[in-house]
Length: 335
Image (cartoon, rainbow, N blue to C red):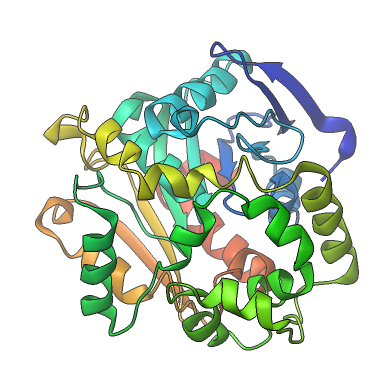
């Protein structure tokens, strides 16, 4: 990604966003890439060049709390209605009427909510690893944990409680080797034992546990992220978890009308499942898209022999699949 194409813009809610923008050529559409945790816009560096070389536009922000974008510490600044306002301000600033939204990890929550708050700005929706996320039900987090454990056979999101605790930033800094080993493990099943269960991540760190990193993590990628982690800390990114464990996101979602709970039926949907993602499990996505509310949607599903970080390990394959999907509903993309 060309460093000269990064910009800064202060959105209407007062936060500065740092973002990459390459304008589309001719009638090609623009892709709006939204990353998750703990990432920056550069996590898309193995995907964005494929599309810009073919003339697609690309708008790729450091999401709120990450990279060189502002990092408010108040959890309420991260609820989806507020986040989507920020993102649409970026579209307005660059004069983009409609875009194709592409999300990974927590970026998929923002892509999902753009369907609820600003569907007129999104031509199509692509989700990678994480599937579409519907409005969060107003139930205690403990009940949510129990439900997902019942569905998956093991606890999936126990680490959200740890990420929501005060003092996370200092703890991660003091146990960076363990954190990186669990974030990008060479053995994806590590997530079932070292990350997903309540208390497992913290205990692993206290034990000093470490293991080899996945082969798709280059030294350059690791060095960049460690530098960003140490510079920016984890206090702001932790709010993506706090809004879920505290009920703030569920409360915010209550304003979504029933008719906007899912994307418009005329909007194409792409979901790239990761068969070796043991937290954002493919079974959840298949179940979601089989629900009654998606019966009239055109959903394209591709499953990759990958862990959660498929945008790093399977970038070439994802690029080809996304490109073919886009060409299917925008004939001008073939020009």
